[in-house]
Image (tube, rainbow, N blue to C red; front, side, top):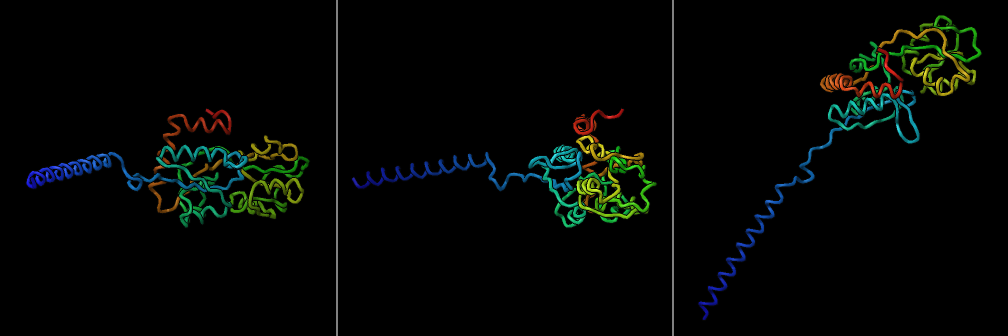
Length: 266
């Protein structure tokens, strides 16, 4: 009797062990079909820095950043396989932020200059229109262009080419943080003129600024607007150049351009 009980017990134990091994095998098989969270590839982020008082290139609308640069940088990031993270800061803080690795790219309607080239590298131009133009009060009759700025009070955005242009013209230059401040100085009569990007001036006047202000003279020859990268990020710069060409080829660039500037010139 005891011998029979022992055999039955041994069989039950063996069956239980087999069932346990099978269950573990099944669970292990399910686990190989799904990667754990730590195994998932991390999403690549492209941190884009800008100064968002520069319509129609970049500005705020409600609680959102909008504009030509914002849309194009987002499309560029996607084409490169990144998700864009957009950061707004003062214009004079952009290059230091790039150098300290707080951002990866500057998209702020900037031009390539020898001085900036000491600190960063540039993409191919992504916007080749524009140039710079003088803006004055609508009732001003003494300033008709750059040649008339000598001795005049000219307000410009800090760290920009127009600041250098005003100084070379012999003007009394006051630098401010944003183009909006420059327009306000003109309206208040505390400045005689400002110099800024032609596309920005046209957009501002179109939005109602022409009630008080006007453009005078002819725009300077456009130098081309570029993105800036850390000197060590040549591969990222080259990737951006390639993606820009692809955006132009597939029609994305034209679609974004015409959203903000109207029909492209042939």
